Image 1 (cartoon, one colour):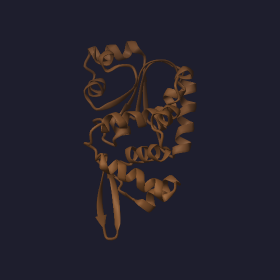
Image 2: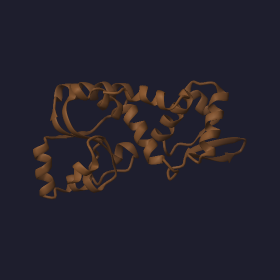
Image 3: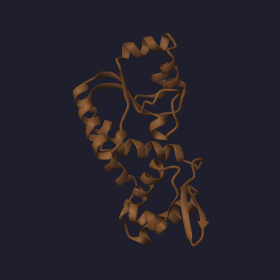
Length: 197
């Protein structure tokens, strides 16, 4: 499996740009000023300023002047925003870990990050971050999730289903599965057409 972070570095030459994309998509509602971004990214001020200006120029971020500071915030409806969000969440964090360890985890038909994980918007009453459908090695998955939780200081709620259970729940119009099918999500593994057919 291709390493998502390495692929990002090949696609986007600027490491500062990659770090900024990661920051903005994982903190979509948190404005940041130039010096704050320099501290957060641990990069040189001129490189950060240059990338912020480029992102503002293509309207990926917008800025607001507050006193003598200019704050930058993700422009959620920017062109390519959804596509870039997908790239970021498949390259870093939980999505990156799942893709990197796909073979260890088992035979995964579908791996899905829910909107509650990707955007912070809850999926109905269910606080689920990750859904895996297939033949999953629970021990390996638990090890990967525990390691991720320790590193990120964030609890991950996940659901696992066999493909047969998923198909049965789909036919019965199970509320959880129905919400998953029609709701916002990010498919890490599998296609949308196969998921809903």
